[in-house]
Amino acid sequence: MGNDKTNMFVAIALSLVVLLGWHYFVTAPASERQRQAAQSQTAQQPGAPQTADGIPAPSPREGSPNAPVPGTVPGGAQGPVSREDALTHSARVRLDTPALYGSIALKGARIDDVSLKNYHETVSDESPRIVLLSPTGSQNPYYAEFGWVGANAGPLPNGDTVWKADGDLLAPGKPLTLSWDNGQGLVFKRLIAVDDKFMFTVRDEVENTSSNPVTLYPYSLVSRWGKPHTQGYYVLHEGLIGVLGNDGLQEYTYDKVAKEPAYGGPGTLGKAWTNVTGGWVGITDKYWAAAAIPEQDKPFTGAFTERTDGATKVYQTSVRGDAVTVAPNASSATTQRLFAGAKEVNQINAYERELGIKQFDLMIDWGWFWFLTKPMFRALDFFFHLAGNFGVSILLVTLILKIFFLPIANRSYVSMAKMKAVQPEMTSIRERYKDDRTKQQQAMMELYKKEKINPVAGCWPVLIQIPVFFALYKVLFITIEMRHAPFFGWIQDLAAPDPTSIVNLFGLLPFAAPDFIHLGVWPIIMGITMFVQMKMNPAPPDPVQAQVFAFMPIVFTFMLGSFPAGLVIYWAWNNTLSVIQQYIIMRRNGVKVELWDNIRGMFKRGDKKAAATKG
Image 1: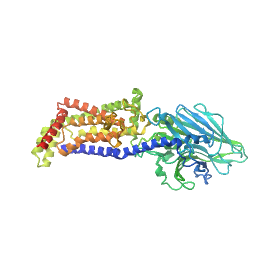
Image 2: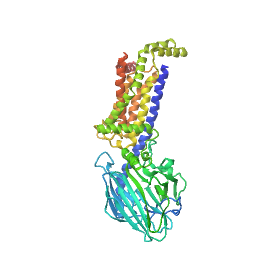
Image 3: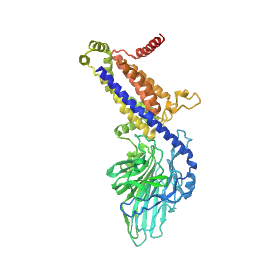
Image 4: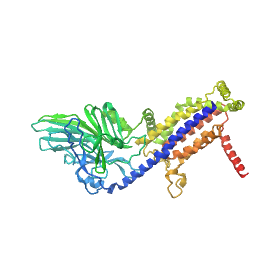
């Protein structure tokens, strides 16, 4: 049973090595490539060439009950223009809120110029602010659009329609009213309001002054030109996303939607969900998203599509409401919403609760183990509001988890202490029955029973730490609250690796350390705490297993070098608390602490090897 216990520890350790190795050798390099690509894109944006331009146009089947909403189609190539120049192609109304700034295009009435006031590209407040939505004509158009489709209704507003505005500013408490007359008896009015965060409310009204009834379908869409750089992590969804009534959460990567069958017009692939009530559709990045939200009590058709426009892929999520018949001298209105901003957890939850948006919290990728990741975030967020620092919050949550699992951990360490106390008897049994494995196991079991020892109790501290580790990793990775969250000293972003490196003596030498051997201060601290924790216990009798355990702190130190600093700080702090706890329990049980003897033994073995080599 002693060997079984050791084997179990080795199995757990090797499993962690595989998982951490996958991150170090596969996902971490992918993240670095994504970061470099994003930086390159930001640097090139002001003068980037335009890939394509276009306007929304009705589909040939738009009068059908199952017809898709308008999509972006070619509208004639133009010369290369910057984002700033593209914004001058249409008269605009300024957008200004505590969280957003930008403008609304009067041509097409698209919401296509949105930047985030409180978020920057890097930890420096001097770095550029995050640009979320951009107009057609820029390098990567990304916008939201609202309107009507229908047959035999005369001209309908589209991307070329020039609306009249009743003001020059859209701000909280200052809605904007747009109007357009199609000249054939239909007058369209659009009221756009915005709150102090990231939600737009769009009320579309159509008045029929003709002598014939008209049938129209309200729609809204989010359209993105060009496949963006994604981080490529299996623990994070980036791409098309939505909740479609009883069909629930739908997540399509940019590659997945391209594998769907033809939908709508030529060159368009996609999937639609019909007769849906409640939900939303959008496009999400790691920290930002844009989502169209229909009326939650009325049925609609939701769709994810990909259109090929020359060399450019155009990705679109859309909702189209049921038919609305407007009688002569009557009017009809529909209200839809647009979320465009940062995926702040508390704000997303508030929108779901206050506006009744079905499962809007799934905009944030909590993963399959949401029952662990959500409580972990709640705990971290609670202590952050008390301490004002997410790093301190991690320390406090770790301490509380230690206290919560104290009974289990105490039993484990007590059992381990008893195991150490009977080590001489165990050695004697192995020697006495070294040629009879069965009798050796029977004698061991009798000893465990006599001393009331659970030989596998020592596994519990490790097993408990694994789900906590992954829950914290997920929270650090997906939540924007952790982005650019500082700790103390040189840690200015808990969601990024420790920026220091032993290669350049932690910044003392004037060159940047290579990424493949990145090893900062906190990973080294973590490695030391792991080393101390392992030296608290006697070395395994098997020389091979002893070597595995001896190298584990070194291996983990290098692997965690590329992990988020917050996770490394957690691991180091958890190891420190475990060492203190184990030391106290061992002393209470009258068991000798092996730490200093084991460390001295390492140097003695080294001296013996050196002497043997010289001899």
